Image 1: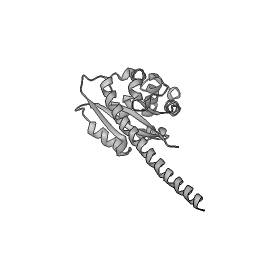
Image 2: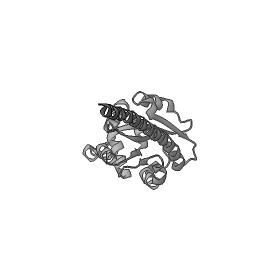
Image 3: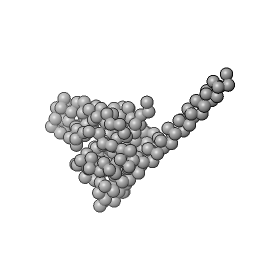
Image 4: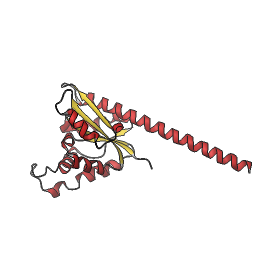
Amino acid sequence: MAKKNAFLLIGPAIPSADGLQQTLTEQQGLLTTAGLITPDVTQGDLDRSAIEVLRTHKAEGLARASVEGSLARVVRRAEKRKAAVLLGHPSYAGADATQRSLLLDAMSGFRTHVVITAERGQPGLDDLIDAWAAQVKPTRLHVVTFEAGDGLDAVLERVVEHARVAHEADLEKRIGKLKKKRAALKEQLEELRSA
């Protein structure tokens, strides 16, 4: 079975990031135009998964056990969805190479697209892009920049456009495979009839 797409918003800047999951849920109509859906998780689930990935539980005043498995729970809920998923957390941008690998390995059941969202001209953006480019296929790394006054809706529209292009490419690929299979089946049928 083909893997579904997952679009992972990693920041470093996401407008209204504190209520990201709620906004994504409210924008389901826009997300559906690109075949996207959000996993059935809360902002708290995503916050705990970011703390787990970045191993910042002590700085947050939490015990390791309180965040252990948070990322796995988020991914399991995303896998239950029947469509491509959109999720993320701005803290993921701060992940080092090992933490990026952990995050991407957890998402191995998906074709993971990493979406870097940053304010135009943000310092360190090129370094962030290079770091993720070392671990993600070029066709699955997207950069969405925005102006200081842009809200999450404007950013989401650009993210949805990237998802729509990926969805169209997936459908074209499936159509191509079906055409090949249909041609092979026609050939088998003709052989059967001529025998």
